[in-house]
Length: 183
Image (cartoon, rainbow, N blue to C red; front, side):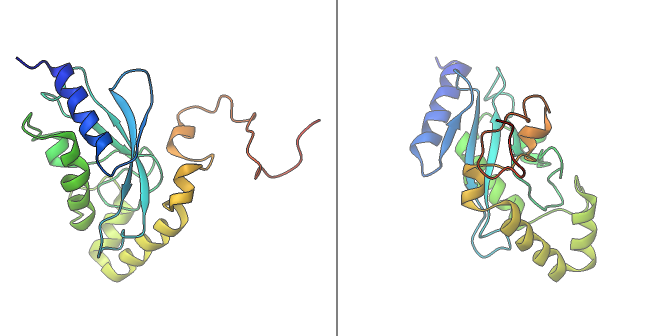
């Protein structure tokens, strides 16, 4: 007999043993970030994102919560929170799916086939419907600005994690902070 916690641990270990870089957030196996690369032959192909994953207590019977940490321009991803609007995760999740399916199938399909009729980002949806070439150019610009491998290693202060709380942002020890610090 397999319990949900054993299945969760097995799925997380399978993800960690794959080609994906996984960064655990807490002591348990229920919250972590995964490095996700845009699918080839798409305007997202040069992008690299950190995707935050939270597994509920009832996983795999209840779907994981998925959100992009760094910015992505897409009709079905909330521009501010990074949350994803994807039926297979939000509505039709099945315990038959494994966590690795999210990164090998579901997210690549979302980026390859956006749905502008069910948007979380109205600007991206409108641009896609109005001018696909300009939409794709905007996607590439966002990838260049917000989704480079070196950026996710050291996320900027305005990343979605920083937006959760302003506390403690004054005491940054990064070298690139503008202005001089007090002695």
